[in-house]
Structures are given as C-alpha cells and as structure tokens.
Image 1 (cartoon, one colour):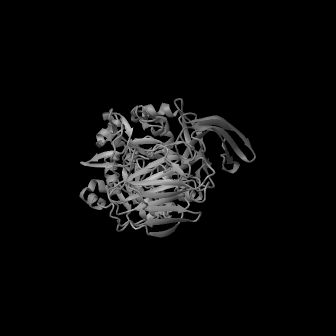
Image 2 (cartoon, rainbow, N blue to C red):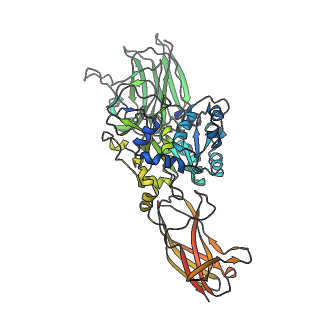
Image 3 (cartoon, rainbow, N blue to C red):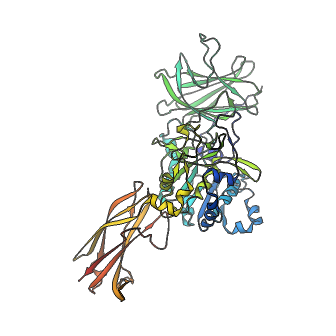
Length: 594
C-alpha cells in the first residue's frame, strides 16, 4: 500500500477560492431533517412569496444593480450571446483567464430567474485575491447596491481572535465598511463536515465522547478510537486547537489500520508539524512542515484500500482536564453525524453592519423549511448566531440539482426592492421570523432571525414597521455670525451608515387665493441655493433624536425681511441619489427675518 501524506501550508488565500467554489454533495447518511431539492417557484413558496407578488417583484427590480462575486463563470459568455435580452442587463466585469469552473455561472442562472430585470454585474473572485479595497471600490463606483458574495476558506480555528484570523478578515471587512456596500455572504457548505467538541483527558489520550468508539473491554488501557472510512481511497482531515492557549499542539495523532499496527504519527512543537509515515515493514519516513497561525494539524492519506482506519488523539498537555478542539473532514467518512457547530465561513464570524450571512434551507419531510445538512452555522466572535437568515439552497435548475449556500443569497436580494435608503440588514431583522421553519430544527440552527416575510416588505406593510422619519425640536437664533439652527433627527435602520443632513433656505411669498409660494434663496457669492450640509455616521441600528446643529453664515443670508422656510433632507453614502431623501414628518421649519 502506497500512502502519501502531506501538510497544509498557510496559504489561506489559495484556499479561499475552494470552499464555496463548488456545489456540495449531501451527506451519505440521511438524518431526521433530510431535505429535498426544489424548483425556483417552489423555493419562492417556501419563503412565503404570495403568487400574486412574484410578477410585481420581478417588475420592481428593474434598475437594481446587483453584483455576483463568485468563482468560475465558464459558459456565461456563450450563454449571453444566445440570450441577447439578458446580455443587455448583464455586465461581465472581470473573469480569470483559464478558470474553467462553472460554479459562478450556475449561481448567475439561478439569480437571473429570481432577480428578473435587475442589472447583474459578474466578478470572478480569483483576480481580486488580496485586492479587496480595489474590488469593493470598483463595485461602488459602478453604482452597485447589493453584492451576492460566495467565497470562503476551509479554515475553522478554535480561537478566532488570533493575528492570523485578524489578517484573514481585515481586508474584506475594512473595504466593505469604507465603501458602505451591502454584502449578502454565503454561510458556506461545511456544515456536514465540521465537529466542535471538548477533548477530555483519559490517562494519556484524548477522547471525543460523541464520536469516538470505545474498545469492547471497558477496562482496557487501549485508548478510544475514532473510526474513519476512506472516500475514493483518501482520508484528509484537520484537527484544530487554541494556539493562543497552547503555542504547540497539545496532542499527537496516531493512525492505525483496523487490525493493528501503525500507518502514521503526527505531532508538533511551537514551530513545526512532524509527520512519520510507516510502511508494512515498519520503516518510517519523516516530513517537517511549518505550523500556521490558525492552529491545526492535518492528515492527508491517499491510495488507501476501502477499509476502516482508526485515529487516536494522544494527550501531551497535562495541565487541563479538557481542551476545546474542532475536527474538519475534508474527505472521508466518520461513524455518526458531525454536529456542524462553528462551520460557517470564517469571513462571517466578525459582525459588520454591511454584511448579512445567509444559510441554505430546503423542504423537509414535514413540508416546512429546514436548514440543508451542508449549510454552515455557528456564532460570531461577539456571540451572535450565524447565519443571520436563511434562503433556498437546494435548487433543481433545469433538471440539474444544485446544493449550496451560494444559491440562497439571490432570493433574499430580490425581496429588498423596498429597502432603498435603509440598511437592509436592519430591515431583515424586522421582517424575518422562524414561523416557516420545521419544529424539528434545533434552536441553535434556526439562524438569528429566520426567514424574511415577503408580505412585510410590501410598501403598505413596511412603512408602519419602520416608523416615521422625523425632524423635531426645531429652534433658531440670529447673531452677528449668522443664523444658527438646531433640531433632532429620528430614523430607523441606519446602522453604520454615513448620512449627510442638509437644510435649504426658501423665501415664502403670497401666491394669492390663500396659497403660499416657496422660492429658493440663492447665495449671490456662490450662485447656489443657500444650504448647510453636515456629515454624520450612525453607530446604533437606529437614529434616535440625534441632535443636529447648522449655521448659515450672515453673508449668505438675504437682506430682505419676510417669512422664510428651512427644508430638511439627507443624503446617504450607501444609497447614492441626486436629490436628498425627505423625512416623513417635520421636515420644514418657518421663521421670520426682520
């Protein structure tokens, strides 16, 4: 038997293209929450789309600009040539030469059915690795409003506050915050392959109580074993520990055939991982690989027969009764069902007001929605549940079944045509619930907010839910420096957003018949309407009676006495408009100049 063993290098950007860049097979073992693929119309029904609303929604998406950031768009150029109507509203911005993947193309085809006549911009992820600032700035410059992002890493560190994790998150999150671009980020497809556990000491071994299988003799000193079956002759797995608590791995891994002996042994110090591979005669070869900052040892065994292999975690650190650890099965099968805890894409574990993590659902046995077995889930570093919401992720597309959280985000984007001027993340929190999820779904896997309710997004229903945008507590005073105006501003769903309150000065005149005419006051020096513009940024989810102060310089004030009016409006960086948004209530203030 020829066994090759390799160590994973710290090349997280190279792995970024892989995790969400392929559709995933469902686990071979069916669970009590088995889900089945559904068509696009069935997916809409599962999310509660009223049939009468579908055409209205599709028609309302004209002019919406959505980007698809994914990996592999082979076939899209030929598709657009054959579909000229789509070609007019689809713009291919950047493809990676030689990338033969088709994942992004299939996501586009699903998105196009859901997003109707929205303008879709295509970005291949690969050319922008390490260039997040350039990527997000380009999207913003094109007026893109929402991004469907499908990329991630096969990295599941136990401690997500280490410098390696910070470097992984920094570029993308920083760029998104800077440009204030709304991202719907797929939760990842590793839910069926990750197991989060506390490794407990027994003599000189660790055990994983809910996965490891004890030897028949309960008194035996032979340690418990984790049974693994190869897949296509290969077993590949990573076992993580908290490298901040233990700079060196607090365990070693022994791999044995079912009938005894040893295939391999792995351990590490604070710098390197050491691998020993044994042949049938007991001869060994050694390979030393540099450890990375994420904290894991990795095994990659190839050319294995279709026979059970046993894995033992031997205890090296003796100062703790149990240690948090995490198992990720890249390839192979383990006896039992992995719990999937903390399996969401690493990019989603930091809270960001402009990023919504979307998990995958489909139809469960009871006809209600349930998370797909592969859908990643867990918690953010701040302790919040992720994903935030769910969308359909097992789609029958023209007879081909596609499984992936990448498919879920377009369904959510299509529902947010009424979100203009607000933070969609805050709106989704207000309009989502768990009522359409199957009762069989455990609380921790139900997502933070559930499934968006389409009917709550209808304008007639949304306005009461959001409440009025109000300007209150107006006052003014005049002195030698000019006109000083103050008021308070209230508006919901503005988390993290930069906004520019503005007041404009109008002169009121009698128009006859009991009517009043308003004309803009123009500053003779600038030839522009007299106005004052402020810059503010919201920290909380809502703006609650934010005090604002404006000063119009005395030189810009008119000398003609009479009645005047101030009109309040506001611009938003995240939603670029040529005219300011106007508040629902209290947006004007009248006063006299003598």
